[in-house]
Image: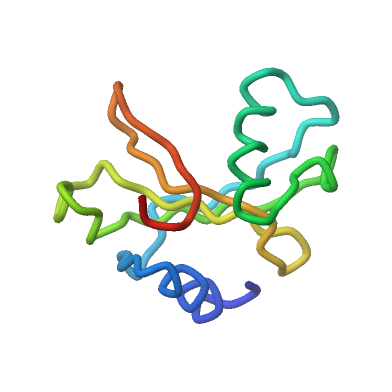
Length: 110
């Protein structure tokens, strides 16, 4: 996932259409020890074949894109897909609503 094209290919395999430009690119640190919130987030990762515990204490890059084709939210700015990348490899991520009463799930469509 070192290139834009590789990240787009990864995202599109789940049927998502996203804007070309990321909403945000930031560095994140995977916590050494997971609190309840991060443990719940890692449960989402485990369900889709990832495990962030393997990267505890490491710095990763998070790419966030706006999803254009989430059913019921087409052409709204509130649905994002986050892709976590460590050493040019995707190690996890999610699809979420950034609304106050939002949701979060793995990469696959619900």
